[in-house]
Length: 602
Image 1 (cartoon, rainbow, N blue to C red):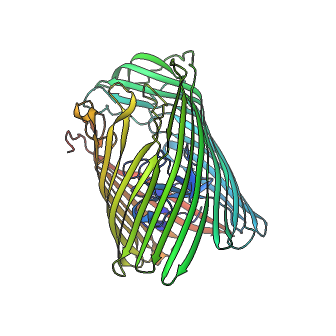
Image 2: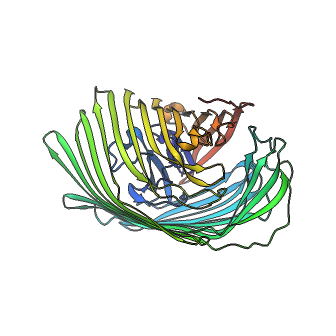
């Protein structure tokens, strides 16, 4: 915990998370305009993992986004990138750490981590965390995390590990979801003013557990993992301000109440890897079997109309009697066999080929329709070809083409068909770029990409369905490394041209750009550890700039551009044998945004 520093650890600007710090152009919710987690592209220690909710930082040390050049050489890449989680595994040394964090508006986090060597090759890790979060939009919530892992290293190079985590988040009052009735932004709302309903306390549980092994087996290398992820929605609420007027009032405020939902998956992968040399060439052969099963219980929500209401004051209403409907259910199964081959010549080139054959089945049982059962099946063939050529000692050219098969996220809470999940879709990505090393510690990466896939969102009737095809074309640049001893720079920008095509665009039902899309994101991170990196004091600064964001389906409303600056410092010291760290950060020390919004982003 005392050594965690995302800026100093990052090798590029594409996305890295360590502990509770994260930097980069991308994250688990957004890679080149799409979510790799929603698409089913999560990994734990490189092994396939079907994720249903965020993993707590007591069980994972962090994650790295594999996209562009960082996906070169990675087995079975995906069009919308891969999020690879690193487990919190114990080492051979006994450790104990205590963390205290005081956050915005008096929020408090207390965390405890310990690891113990039980024998020479058997270690235990335990982590606990308690959070009281006071939100800027009013209200608060409590959460408690319990996590643990065991690691057994029976011989050199071998690892067998198991882990589990349990999270409970409760007393989480629903914040309003605001939908303006015209081309105007909501009025300003004073921070910490609680305008939600006091009885909309959400209560959610999350459990993740599993085991993995990495073993040398003769000339082969065996990697295998089996994981279980469960999200349990004991109580859930969504507070919808529909057709909001410019003064913050709404003619129809609706609370969507839901309970006893469940989303759980069992997933894993077995992988055999053989590496061998032939002359000046290094070869790698990879055989993979990935599989998952999933089942969800959803629907049965109750819509409670509160009628006329306002954002400008706490419009509290009496708690109603909740009457939930029957739940819908769906089950998913997927099996994928993959074969990968890679060849490389040192300081010359690398080439990676992969083919995968999947069998996919999803069945639905809807409680509220006459013919409740529906089945979707598919047997896609997907593949990838990526390569890198070292033009000079400093210059590398890379590129590739990937065809994928991904799942679509469930219909959001505000949809008429809330919780419904469409069938899986076909996707593809092409990219080309270069990397130039200014020095052994500083490099720049620049690339162009194009991603196409079907587009799902809300139509004019708030029904979540396919509205056409989406195409994200963009340019991304990363400058990362050490400028001088103790001074680290991570900077990057991504320019994305996101467009939708189809009948809904042609007839004017929706605009040509997807909701939530931005044209540009730019980041700049600096970490300066004084005395050429040997001082106990380090200073850091993070700058983020976003262009305007599309705010509605017709593309007639945009959230304004914004720029933020975060400032921080670390001071390291010791008391006896205990290493200590004081971390101070002022989030949004500077925050600006335009008071107007553009009407044309073409």
